Each structure stands twice: as C-alpha cells, then as structure tokens.
Length: 381
Image (cartoon, rainbow, N blue to C red; front, top):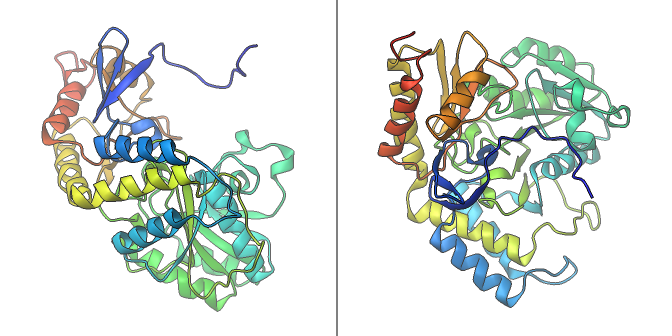
C-alpha cells in the first residue's frame, strides 16, 4: 500500500528528540526552531512529560466519555489557574480543527445564525466548518463551502461594524496572532472593541489560540496582551507537546445542554496526562517568563542583523520578513546549518516557533545560522 502523497517532505528522518534538538539515526543534531508547527511547547522528551504519559498508559490509556474521568477536572483546574480564566468552561477535543469546529458550532447554536466574519490571512483548520473560515480557497472542496463567510482585513473596525450591522452574523473568529498568515498581531484596541460590537449585534467573538496559545506569546493566550474577553477560545498545538489534544474554553453565560457536543477521543486519560504534564512544566519552570525573555532577545538580535525588512511577533512566536522568497534560505538553514524553521502563507516570511524552554545559547545559535548564510549576512551579500 502506498501513502497518499500530499506532503512535500525533506529527506531527513528524526528518530530522537531532546529539548530543542532532534537527531537522525547517524547522530546528526538539528536545532528545532519550529517545533513541528508550534506543537512542541516544553521540549522533546521532557522527563516529567515522559513519566506522566508512561505511568498513565500503564494504568489506563483510554475509555470513553460515558464514564467519569477525574483527570479532565484536574486538567481544567490547572488550566484555569495558569490562564486566569477559571470561570470559563472546558470542552476537550483532539485537534485545533476540531476545536474550531465546535467553537463555530456553539456560536451557531447560541445565535441561531450561520454567517461568520473571518480575516484575510487567517487559518482555522482543514475540516469542514473550520476550513470554510480559512483564507485559502485552494484547500476547500465544494462540500466545505457550506455557510457564508466574509473575509475582512484585520484592524479595520469599521468594516467589522458594517458587516455586523446586517444582523445575520453568528460569530467573528480571529487568531490571537495570525500564524500561517505570517505572524501578524492584531492591535490591542481593535481586539478590545470587538466583544461589545459583536454583542450589540447579536454575535459572538471566537479567539483562535490554536497556535498562539499556551504561553507561546509570553502570555498564556496571545489575546491577553490586550484586555479583550472572548466568548469562546479554541486551543490545541502546544497543549499536549505532541500528543493530540485540543480544547474549547466557553464563557459561563453559554449554557451546556446534554448531547450538544461530543467526541470519541477528546479528553481521554492519556491525553489528559499529557496536558497536565505540559501545564506542570510551564508553571514549575517559568516558561511564560522565559518566552518573553528569550523572545525579546531573539527578535532584537534579528533586527540588529539588518537582514530583515520587519521582525514581528510576541514571545517565541516570531515572523521574519524578507524582500524575497524564503524557500532557498530555509533549505540552507536546514541542510548547511542544521536549523529547522517554518514557512508561512506569505512566501517571504519565515516563522520561528521554538520550544518555550529555548535558551539564550540556542537563540545565539539561530542568529549565527542566519548571518552565516552568504546571501544574508556573509561576504557575498
């Protein structure tokens, strides 16, 4: 049987990870400045994480949501404490796309409407409802275009108001920081204006924190760089450090009804163990502060190279803008300097999404790799 050939693969096979590094079979070490799409939040093979998962799977890896699972409440309690959102309700799922599916479904249940306002450059997943709200027509099949979506520019409050006033919008969905779009940060005052604008027109505000959440921005959620209070928050990637887990945080005024949402694998015993381990490490090792400290240092160091037309982001969610496509540069970084980086929808943007326990030495290693590429920082520039 052949694999369905939909991925463009680098000819590299990591077989082991440790902290911010991955290793191939021959022992070659690569600095992971991408974390597998921002998934690796506390580093590869963190000892506490390995211990928690190993002990849990030896006891009970899975049973359905038809029985009590106190690990779900433990996860909710730790999440509420660290995020400062302990008055919200938690629904556990298995991925970011599933989180956004359920967030959009809740908004539609609550409002009785089906039109959604989303944003140019936004990405919310590849499943049915989520991909329809994603600004990429190439990944939508006809069956995905199953409700009306209006795409607007971020930070244009007048455009949002104009659409909401039509009275048929169920939700506005926006990323705390646009990830795949190229690390674009919404203005704080813009985000803060959205809840009242939504509520005055019978709509809800969904903050997609799938990539930007879980400490990546230096706040627990990226929207917490402002004073906005969303109705619904979706999350996933960094939540399980590689184990598939996602979640939806739901404001207390949205009432749960039996059977309105459901999932087979969401909130399993093993998933909760992974999620609890991640929260333990974030708290005990002060990873929010580390993301701020190392992120600020890395962004300033990148600015000082004079290579990039713009360096943007928060914490360890960083976008580097060039005046030319970054494909050749990423290959040189990977194959000549052994540094993994990420691309974006904008072909001129590189994304840096290292683990939250990235060190100063590793930041310097990244800067050295960039400046060693001849077309950027070397003598041939």
